[in-house]
Length: 100
Image (cartoon, rainbow, N blue to C red; front, top):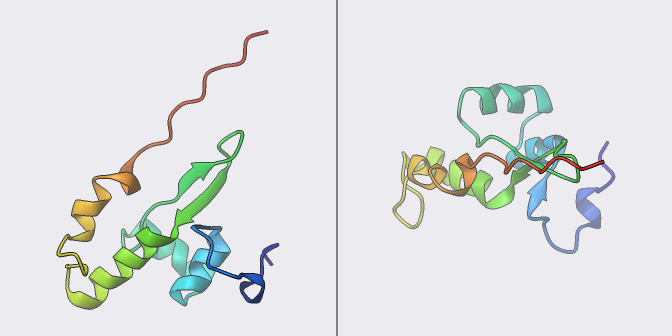
C-alpha cells in the first residue's frame, strides 16, 4: 500500500504513483499497466533524484478520461493526442554525469 492514503489528502496530489493512478481511474494496477501500454492512459514521467520514480500527472489522467467519455474531445476542444504532443510525451531531460 502506498505511504499516502486517499483519506489523508487535504487536496489531491498533482502526481500519482502507479497504485494511486490505478485507484484514481478506478481499476487495479495490472489492468492499469495494460491500459497504459495500449495507449488508453498517458505514460508516466520519471522523477526523483535518480529518475527512478514513475509518476502519473493527474491532469493528464483527467484529460485522457474526458476524451474517452466524450469521443475524442476534451472540455477545451483539444484531443488527447494534441495535448499528448506537449507535456505528456516529453522525455525526461538526461541528468549530467557526476564528476569525480
